[in-house]
Length: 328
Image (cartoon, rainbow, N blue to C red; front, top):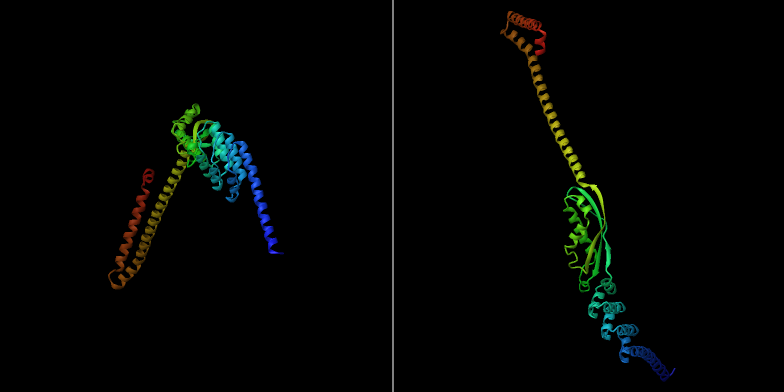
């Protein structure tokens, strides 16, 4: 194929593309023009080269203008290129304007880029949201456990949406306030009679400080009586003291048994020595006979003395009365 023919086809393709781009740009330009949103045709054409969808920008611009809000096209393009939800931001601006809420485009864009739903925040500013806490258990001073459920009515604070804590922080602070209030009550009957004291005390603590919400009210939805924690603690403490006393008694018994065993061993040792000593007497007497230190008459005299001693002991035992025996 000749080079001139190839060049002709290339030029023709380029022209067709340009005509298509211009035709679509002219359509969007006319749509913006008749809607009162003035956007240059060349600006619409170059949006494609900046990788910005012209249709989204023009429609967002028209929507804002129709609501009486003038937003520069460059701001719309920059927010889209930053990864923001452009349509959501414009809808939030329109909703805020209708509700007489002071909200600028830059603030709305910052809220959107921070990951929060800016339209939902505006709607929550107009229509507060009710958050229900889970069942929170706390113990009064009399040891009775109470379980409370509260409903927290919050409104979005536009000025603190960027950098402010979320709903989880509100729930945590409210739960902490409920536990503290019930724990400071003298008895559980006071809480059951006046549950509104919990909400008043918790609300007065300014729990919405540093959060993206403003607490409007805290209502106690339900209060149930739980276990007698104080009695359970006393029972556990008594059981623990009992086990400690038993352990100490067992320790003393073991020590006494050890002392008894030691004394028995000593007595047995002494008895063994006595037996051993008595076993040496016949040997000593035999040695005395052999050495001439003990004669036969001396031996008989000792036997007579021993027999006389046994007789006297026997007679003395027989002469004791019943009372003497019991006393003995």
